[in-house]
Length: 518
Image 1: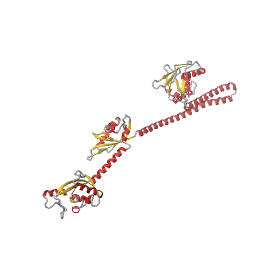
Image 2: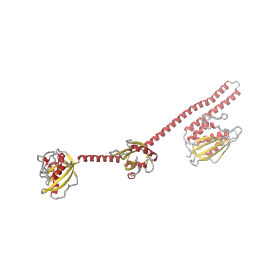
Image 3: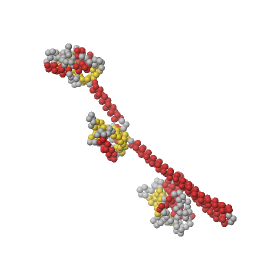
Image 4: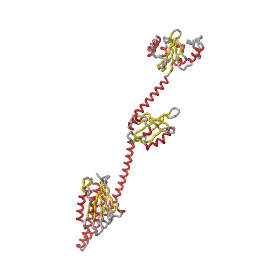
């Protein structure tokens, strides 16, 4: 094929060879003229002998302007010209070429001074008695810019994935479900307790708590089918040690050009502490509600307590006043005065008992519990001796082996004394009171329950709870203030225990006092 200068040629023609070129040469030349890649022919001194129209468009020089000029001066940036020229000379003299048929990327300069990136393939041939060089040149500026942009985007995405403060997983997709983990970031590994290598290849479903997998089964097919853009809900994941990790899960799907799913991206934010705080808030609100209810009940009790106190204290006071007036106005002072004095004494005594009871009731509520080990057996013996002195009939109290309890001794003595005193007091006329005291230890909790069984008149079923109310008196046939059992309940409950009454198997009542193990 002959290659020559285009002198007077039609610029639109696919011509360029010498007039004596063979038809095949013309065909080859036409093919090179219509090639989208630039094609350049150089002599052994780097002068342009011919280039095609793609080269004209690429570099901005016409064929006539380029022929005979050094390629170095036309398209090689100044900082590379020396190296380019030396390389051609080395190749022309038979040296080892640095550029060959394998494409390489180099920078080129255009006529307007702009720089472009080209892919260059260089070949060598013998022609007309000397070496010639030819080169195919393709502009890859846009392609490389796109590749660089893609690489930058991938690097940024990788940095975001690796350094995200929330857990991130990349998983396979298929058959309407998320598949195995392709990659996991460090935050996900820390959250779940696995290494990144251990997470890779693990089924995504195995990381979800079995009670929450129904969420994925219902929602994931909709996401993969394109009916949803994103999945967002809270669920539990399972750590390596089996612990539950509450997460706010967000999942999206990466698709190819035809919309088919390629893989899924998951973000997992650990919300365990947030949920724990929310649950704690619910508990605190419930405790506050109960406290408010307790306060309301206490206020209601206080109102009833105030009314009862006013009533019970005014009665003896009115009796005192009335008999005092009788004493003052009586003509027969000695006989009436003795009766009035007796009535005044009884009223004052009852009022004193009420005041003492109120003081004990208040102390049972507010006194500090200075617990110490108390021998209940010794305490019962002491109280029985005191009861025997003041009782109007013989008192019989039997007991089994009784434990030592960690209690506030003064307050707990009030409990035992009140229960024993009621067992001795509330018996039918003519019946000798009997009380049997026993104790039972719960084998599971180690709590002790004291049982006080008496042979008294008993308590109706509907009244077994009311008798613990302040100033409640089930019968007025026996002396009392109606405060004793209320004091017992307060003391026992302040110790964390419980007091209740059941009917005795042979009549009477059985008072149970359960005290927790310290």
